[in-house]
Image (cartoon, rainbow, N blue to C red):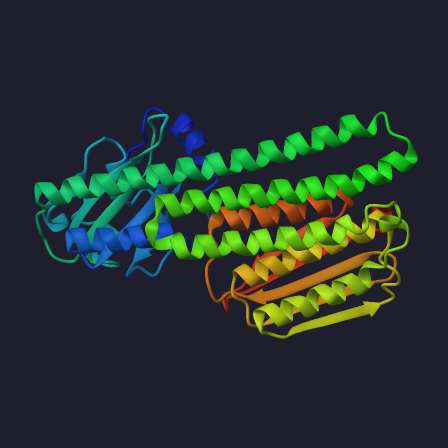
Length: 383
C-alpha cells in the first residue's frame, strides 16, 4: 500500500481549510443532498463529501457509510487532492497503491473509487466529493464532468458560509462601535434611553440579516423557497412584536421598574400557543426580581433560546432558571427538523454576545438522542 502523500503547500492548505470553520459541524441538508446526487450520477451505493484535515479525512456528508472520519494515511481521498482532475481507481485490488489497503481487504470492501477535488477560491484542494462501489466499474465523460460540477458546488457553499459569517461579524462590530462612541458623551438618563434604542437597533439589524439570508437561500435553491419564505414571515412577525413591546416602554423605567420574570412567563406561554406544545418552565432557588438592564438582557436570551426550539420543530422543551446570587439557566429541546446553518449561527452568536455582556459562560451539548442542552451561567457580578 502507498500512503497518501502530503501536498507541498500543506500548511497553507490547512490554514485555508480551517478558515471556513466547517470541520466537526452538524449535518446540513445542502451537503446531504449532494451525496445523494453523486450516488445517482455515478450509480454507486456509497458517496462522501469530505475534507482532508491534518491526520484524518472528515466526512461532512455520507451515503451508506457509518462513520464521520477515517485515517488520512489510508485514504483514497488523500491521493485525490494531489491533482486537479477527477482521481479514478477502476479496481483497487489491481492497483499497487491500494490492493492491500484496509478499506479494500476489509472495511468498506472498496473496488471502485472516483474523487473530484474540492478547490477553494484561493486554489487549495481542501477535500473531495467521491463515489465508491464494491465492484469495478467505469465512468462516462458526462459522469466525470458532473462529479466535478458537484465539487464546485461544495466550494460555493463554503464561500457562502464564510461570507455569511463575515456579514454577521461586521454587523456586530459596527453595532458595538456605535454603542461605545455614543456612551462616551451621554448623561445617565441619556444612557438609559440609548440602551433601549440600542435594543431596537440590534433587533432590526439581526432580523434584516436573517431575512436577507433566507431570501438568498431561496434564490439559490428553489426547493427551499417555501421554508425560507415562512422563516422570513416568522422573523418579521417577531420583529413587529418586539418593536411594539419596546416602543411602549421607551422611558428609563424599562430598566428600573420592569420585572422580566413575568415577561419570560408570558413569552413561554406565547411559544406554547404558537408551537402547540408544552414547555416545562421552572424557576428555582431565589430568582427574585429580574429587573434593570440585566433582566432585559436575560429576557432577550430567553427569546433566542425559544427561537432555537421553534426553528428545530421541538416537541419536548424545558427551561430551568435557578438563582441564588448567580443565575443558572438550563434549556433543553429536541430536534425534529434541521435548521439552516446560517440561521443557527446567527441565533447562537446573539445569545453568546449577550452572555458575554453579563460576563457569563455559555455551553452547548448535543446528544445521540437528538436532544440539545444549553447551559448558561450569569454571575452575580453581571448585575
